[in-house]
Image (cartoon, rainbow, N blue to C red):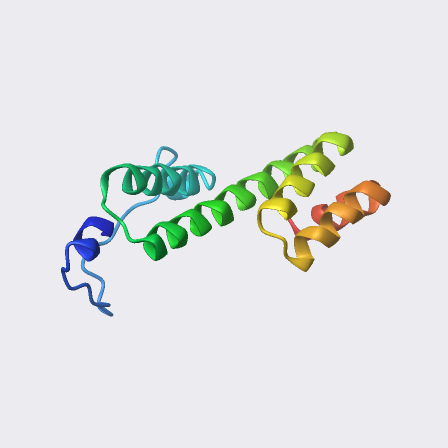
Length: 126
């Protein structure tokens, strides 16, 4: 899609489903972290192979930062549930550093100061 859009092709939204897919254990949607990792590979390839304007490059790099921050946050959640509070805090802090939102900063503070409470809150959401 990136190459089509970059080369001037037209992309439009289609409301009617064109295909149906089945989710199974090996599919990307069955493994939630595989999808963002795949997106990172696509964006990295676009940075390497396409001749991009400064604005296009900046947009891709920002999207990559968001995806990386989301992956760090997911890892922090996994570590928090496993009881590794120190590493969970480090991962969430790194996530907040990449994409500094209030939610990420608050989550990092909560994991640092009241990890047991953060763990209970996460368990209640699952």
